[in-house]
Length: 49
Image 1 (cartoon, helix red, strand yellow):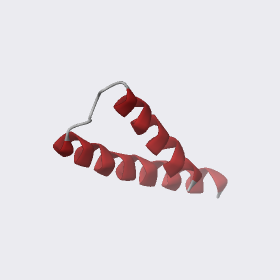
Image 2 (cartoon, one colour; image 1 turned 135 degrees about the vertical axis):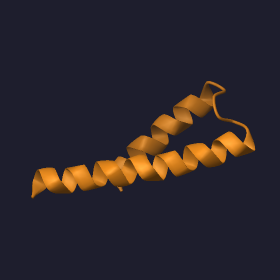
Image 3 (cartoon, helix red, strand yellow; image 1 turned 60 degrees about the vertical axis):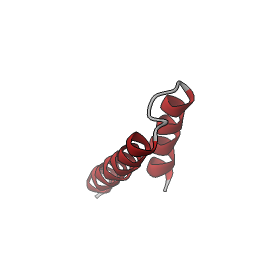
């Protein structure tokens, strides 16, 4: 949850700058956020293991 929160926060920073505010780009950014979060969570799991 921590890594998802970090990635979503970065997404919101970009949205605050006016990047990705349209509906279609917002949907894409949300999908990218979930994908990057899953990758980071898996990498963190491998690192801890």
